[in-house]
Image 1 (cartoon, rainbow, N blue to C red):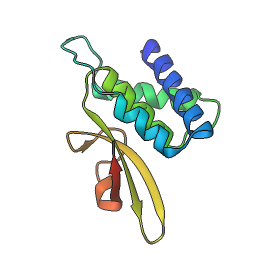
Image 2: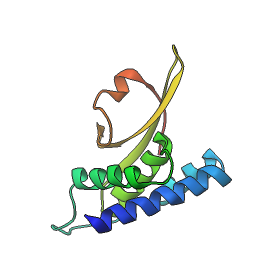
Image 3: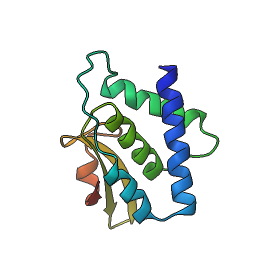
Length: 125
């Protein structure tokens, strides 16, 4: 678990850097280039273990982690272990809010399962 938390923390730092010095288009391009690795390893961590590692990494991160940063990092982490994860961004009109989360085969893995009921999907990558 320690290795997963450190890897998750490094992904948070990577996407923090992209969000600070680049734009949203660059973040999307990174996600589109990082496809899921093929993995038949039976000892690979589960989706829950990977998301828990990201939760711990967010706790130990040196500043507040935004949902976009967290979801991008979680997507890359899941894809690294062979999951076909997608980062979804959505918005709510009144009151205006935006949010990002991760889904695998249409199921939310790093947030509440009813995110699509609250937010209109704007993009997925």
